[in-house]
Image (tube, rainbow, N blue to C red; front, side, top):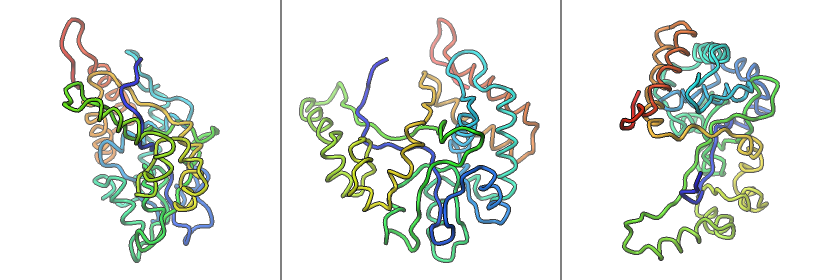
Length: 280
């Protein structure tokens, strides 16, 4: 493979929680489910986040989704994951199906909120900074769905690249090197509100002190994250698969049927032999 961009923002699904409501973040999926039964959990399920939850749970159960032309998801694991999602979805606000991470974090951090935890959510460091919203949020590693460490979280983040058609190519390249450097990432980038992608920033004591230890407290999850497929056609699959999961949740479809459809959609997302890029 090739490196097509410099990472400038690192993120994976982590766990958000209210330190004024809980003494610690839930350590296990069972603990998070107990909170959900009390009406104190939100889970972002707006596409593509429903698929990201599915991916993270599968990865944490030590059976991550594949990238090749075989089954994208192990059928038995896929059914287990979908049933886990079905169970927690039954105990959260149905509005979660239309909520992205920012919508969930806004509600958690707002005045009068009873929500204490979002067990799988992309982290946004701003919410960990005192004074950003009425209530400061803390972030932690994902709760254990199985017996594994906090591994398998669906990786996100942002990179910076330079267009081959740029009229100021060298200046743009110089800027990309500058903004992606460890010195800038742990300095002006972080202090200006950015969420760095460089390890030097994630390990910096000052950066962590300013952000409620956001980086140190989620580092293990980031290090053990899973990289989603990158073939031409994946993005079409991502939308179709997210929609299929949500339809399965709302219409109470059989788990095996949902997983079979996910595997079919993934296979269909690859370009046909000798043809143009395919779509699901």
